[in-house]
Image (tube, rainbow, N blue to C red; front, side):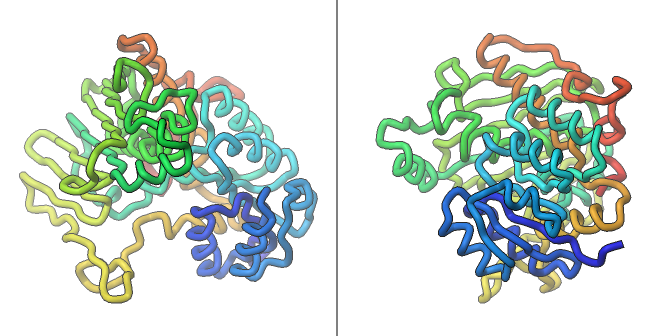
Length: 372
């Protein structure tokens, strides 16, 4: 067995910088190459990570026998296509969220993974957060979950700087650059909420009713999900909110006599039980987040590279396989359908999954249990 996983970063924008830091902290991982359509971006990441080379040619990396895996950090709309190319080339794949934009893409990538010997891991890191793990230990069966995502005005100003003054706050259509499918849209930041709700609820969705601003598919929207166990959840996304009083990510879980709430996954409080949660996580003078004991706080994102390296080098249970990674895609696509039709839509989780035998994959059947 090899002692290091040689990886290439594909897409050298902002999120790649954070993954690079974790690659460099992982003893079993080495950066071999970087790829970006913008040559200067690829060079910058290569120099930061000590890579052997940088390139604008994806094929050079995929044909390189010295590269074992790719870390896909490119734009959302390219994730599935690059994943398929990498799988065909025999490379292991770690892909940023959302890994697939549509169920059609999800089935194609699932089939490619299922018929290959490569590992595929998605990046819905909320699953790995200590807050999520602790909450699921205490509340086994939620009755109601609320998750809100608010993009503050500073983000809206950035969007306008990119897409022009006519990019209306909160009213972006599906076919616009900043629509629900786009950067900072419902399926970007809000996709975390859809995964987290399903994972925490531990039940399959059976009906979705979604409404967008102006009665159309928009970022500012609400997605109501009814589950097989009778419970209900509400995912609220807004790019007109302040992000002030209530932060960007806020979640509540009601489990009968016990309830829980989390702010930005940096705190967790319970009511109705003596079970301890987490006090507010804070940043000291260095800007490093610390838990109440003073230890560096690792939200779950920081562990992903180590998890991926272990998976590729040693095998074992996949922390976030291709089928589990596709669940938010399925919920989101059905939510857009509901927004367009202006009525609830029935859903069947089996439609989210391609498998050779038609059976529901274990990771989806068990809501990700046992795969942390």
